[in-house]
Length: 505
Image 1 (cartoon, rainbow, N blue to C red):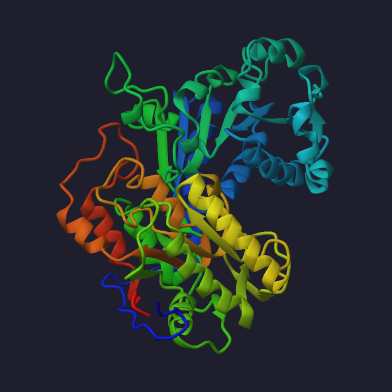
Image 2 (tube, rainbow, N blue to C red):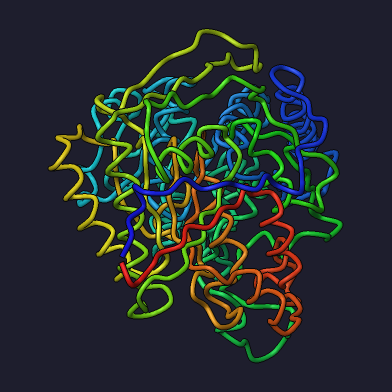
């Protein structure tokens, strides 16, 4: 069988180009304007001039939503009728970095991280320096202005009464917090939100509408109201109500400008979507490669999302457990890592004004991985992890250069280059799992510099023959299980090439 090192590949450029977009401070200003509009809505609630009890700040992936949340926290604390704020999210890995960011702005003596004793070893020194830590309700400083905890910690049986008894009512005169902020709101299911909703008279949800909710409604039919399901992302139960204020963040900070068409394909119903990064702000510096490796990595380095379809491989164990296809990825990564590469990244101030450019090489340890390999099934990721361990040992890679993960576990994470098995690779139909909006969105929107999806040949045939399907009627973003037309629109933003194997070789 021939190898990926032998023949070059011609990549056809995407049929859907990036249309005119705003960049740098012009794009960032749009998010600031949306954040301030949400803040005005919250101020009206605190003033007693508005009856809104839900404020939703909807974001695309990489929109800087956590920055927006922190800004709203500092603005709200300056209000005369806001004595105390609660902040929550579904998981500790979301709460910890947010606690650090809020503590840096508000002060460690005023910000309390409410966490179980079992989580203490997981706290970094930087988090510990920025917050006060409490493992029981009685440890929370009575003068704390901000208290952060997971929804499970805040929603534990009897916790509301313990907080009320220990802290007393906040400025509203009844509840322990004046505002409840929910980060990564579209990951928090409705049944968890109902356990914490009473902590404050108004809830502010900030999050990426493309994240994967914990459980799909179609898999958990709810007896009773067909428009209600306790496992949905909680904001979907309140959008459109007169008591809810909702607004979109119309710019993204994460992707390079060449990826913007892909972002717009996922969020195609938004009025506009711009990108802080301008052309040339984020680049991949490649060495001299040969054959297919040169073709593939040169395409990835342009920033344009790249799809490599592979034909002629031996059959996989299952459509999404595909060692032969992983072997192709391993060979491509082996060639790249043997030669070494670097990325350059433009940095910006809080207003999106360009600052200096940093360079990171594949020989350096990094906080955000340089390359992440993503797959949808645990078994496929086990195989990918074995591959990663071989490459790390072979090339003596520093920590963080190359990692593997399931798509679901990589929500909320960022990396320079994503290499992923396309969720539809080898599929025979568009089922609820491999065709989920959130699963494909997370796969495609983690990278700051380059995206490479690898699939067995046949995606076009699958999409042309798949029966039409409608989205689930629960109001989730996009259509939760993507119809073929949406998949086709997304693929139109990719540069595409095919690698053919000769099984006789």
